[in-house]
Image 1 (cartoon, rainbow, N blue to C red):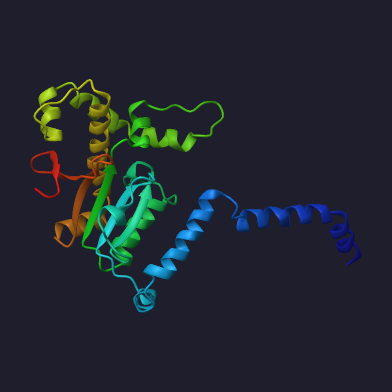
Image 2: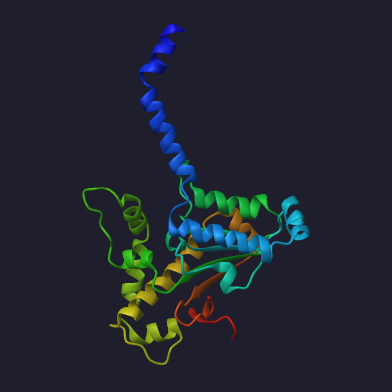
Length: 257
């Protein structure tokens, strides 16, 4: 007992410092961003929160759409689709990436979300993979990002390596102007234009994530039994428009066509 007491007394400054760090981590609301969120929550409680509706939501969820999108702050699924709580079961990852099936037994958070959406919930009828314009993750794929010696971006570099096929497919497509016109559903394109190159990579990435998702047997079974549909979407930040991939015509076109 005395030894324990001596240890506590001798290390009291360490315990105080650790306690201060924990408090700083948990309760520091001094930054502008956090203050704006707290104020936003006040507005939500005063003007939006419906007690009876949220008490019902508390009991269960029955979303029909599993919405996979990029983590980018400019893409907000509920806003661009005018959807409500419970409408979308969401997964947000860098570059809206879903890893294909592998023989590894290691834990994968994105696959866990996919499993839960389709095997844990019984209400999902559709999967949407939504990419967007000016995607930083796709820019990294295009530039074949390499990490420096610091290792600060080692997982992003792994993401880029996993998506090498997207870069290669985009480069091959961009060699044929007519193919790009068809894929983008445009009358004219400039295959040397930076925005065009980015858009091709971003849209090919969407298509490839759909392919990755199909590598899971439980997904393919639902698709084969016609109890599940998959959709590839692309949100243009500047125009606010959404396009969808037509797997028959092999091109993107407006969801309102």
